[in-house]
Length: 162
Image 1 (tube, one colour):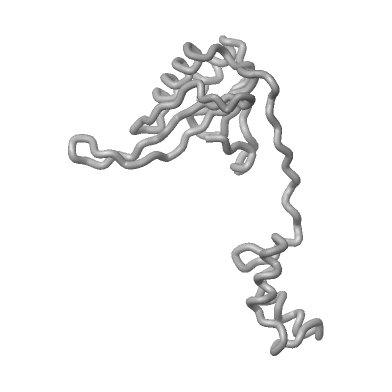
Image 2: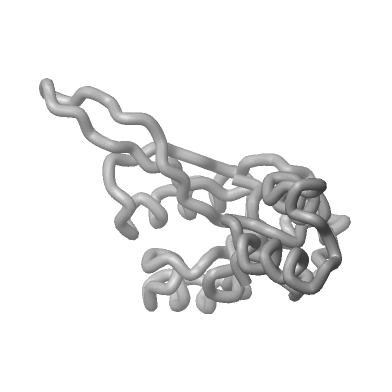
């Protein structure tokens, strides 16, 4: 429900007087108590989230791809992408590298280097990006005895270390 409609209903029902309480005050109070966002009221509270972390190194690695800076290559500006793993327990980065594309070749290289440098995790936890859903990664993880787990779709708060 738009905050403006809610404000008008409060006035109409006699709960507040227009000259005593402004729209901005109602909007600010609703936002302060996490009941409004983008000028709409939400009567549904967000699902409670609890932190989790494994107590041993190499149990779970989170994988992620982040957008990096633009760099000049042969006089042309190219976007970069950081592909990284981070250990859930120690927060150590087994390996991370910037690439100029977000294709599977970069993930293959980062995965190989991370495994060589830090050993094998029990679980790799990734979002639903195309490179993390590839059959090649699923097959490689299965061959190595690594569980490949994915976040729920459209749930960016389920991750967030990288």
